[in-house]
Length: 115
Ligand SMILES: [Zn+2]
Ligand SMILES: [Zn+2]
Image (cartoon, rainbow, N blue to C red; front, side, top):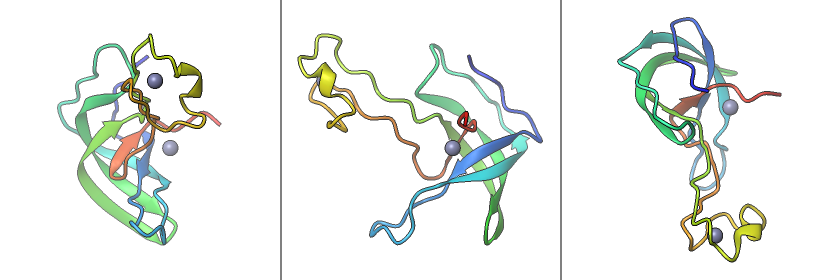
């Protein structure tokens, strides 16, 4: 299921956290103000090529961003034969088999999570 972004849609923008944790990386509401040659990736999930311009609505104010990359923050699948598969996500955040926990990276946008 991949949707194409269009002007006026509301998405989430992920703010940057600070390295010492004073600010957490958080989802902000953002309105798409422009779409640049968007290409949905094959197979869904993971990083898609394409970027949009956004008007980001922060509680403190609004700012405008160009060329924001789409990242749904999906996990990176590891080896299907991993002996520690059951520990993926709990307690592991990454695994020698290549699996990496999903996370939204700062400075990217994604479709709002279903509540
Ligand atoms: Zn979000
Ligand atoms: Zn593994």
